[in-house]
Length: 252
Ligand code: TMP
Ligand code: ASP
Image (cartoon, rainbow, N blue to C red):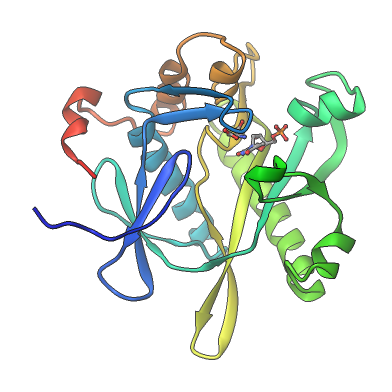
C-alpha cells in the first residue's frame, strides 16, 4: 500500500499531498463534532455524503464563474483540490436568524432578515472562533481591504446562487459558512472558495415542513443526521447507490 503524506487533519477532514505540487487530496471523515468539539460522534456515511454534496455545490459555483478549489472527485471519500493559502476567517452569510446570531442578539430562530447578513469569525479553535469586525481583519493583516471587499462580493454571490439551488428542491438556505483561499496563478493572486459546502456547513430547512436537514440534527439531538443529509442528496439526484458499509474500503 502506498503511504500518503498527511498535511493537515481537522475535525471533519484530512488533507494529503496531491499528485502535483499545487494539488491536495481532501478526505472526508465520518466524524461529527459540534460546539468546538465538545460533542463528538462518528456517523457512518457522513463523509461520503459531504464529499458528493460539496462536489455538487462547488461545480455549480464554477459554472457561474465563481472559482473554487474543487478539481475532481476521486472516490466516495476523497476529492482532488487546488492547494491554496486559507484566509483565517469563517465567512458566514445569514438569510434567517438561527444559531449563534439568535443567541447573541435574541432574535427568534427563523426570523427573515431584511437583507443577507455577512459575518466574519476568526478561525482559531483555541479562541472558539470569535466574531470579528472588518477593522480586526485588516488591522491584523488577515486580509487586505481589497481582498475583504472581494470576499464580501463572493460571499453574497455564493448566497444568491446556492439559495437558488436549494429553492429549486424546496429547501431554505438559512445560513452557511465558507472559507476562502488565495491561489497563485503565476504572479496573479486569485481568491477561491475552499474547504467544503455541505450540510455540515449550512443550515438547510425543508421549505414546507421546516424540518432541519443539516448538522443541527446532531447539534440539537433531533434524530438521525444521515437521514437529513441523504434527503438533501436525493433531492439533488446525487445520492450514491452503494450502502455506506461498502464505502468504508477507502482507508486513510
Ligand atoms: P452559527 O450560527 O453557529 O454561528 O453558524 C452559522 C453557520 O456556519 C451555520 O450554517 C453553521 C456554520 N458553521 C460552520 O460551518 N462551522 C463552524 O465552526 C460554525 C460555528 C458554524
Ligand atoms: N463548530 C463546529 C460546528 O458546530 C464544529 C466544531 O466546532 O466542533 O459546526
